[in-house]
Length: 191
Image 1: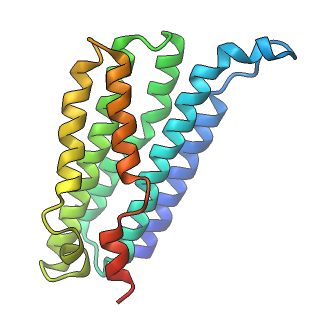
Image 2 (image 1 turned 135 degrees about the vertical axis):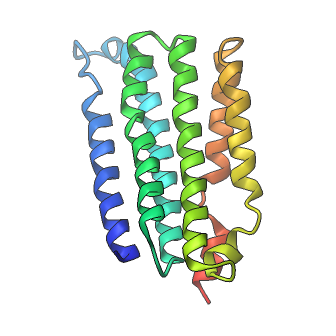
């Protein structure tokens, strides 16, 4: 299988996840501004989740453009990433229905954290197939940014039970760190 075919499959799954997320938004029960207020928290969660899915998709896109070969390990690692991304609509719905209780907020962090772990495993699988001198291996190096993100998710999840706002701040901070596509990879693609 070529990297472009894997990318096309991933694009399709991500498109479905985004569609499911937007379909979970409830239509306000009224026509005035007051009718919109109950929808604000879940809409904000949707926007944040859309951004997170976009971050994974964008960085995945760049990673695959720095990839020449894929094998079975890469396919399974990619499926693991897509599995965790596909759970994002579920945890958003759970947070909404429980008014953003601690357990659903922690589950949201677990899902994002496991997606980050899966992304790292995918990166490592691609490097194993393409070699330590491949463009991707050279670009990511020791991947301190990826490791720090996973560590921050490990910290944020239990913090959710003490302060949902503190955990949310960590989740947002991680997203902000990844908002711009991975420049390490972009720089290698220009050569």
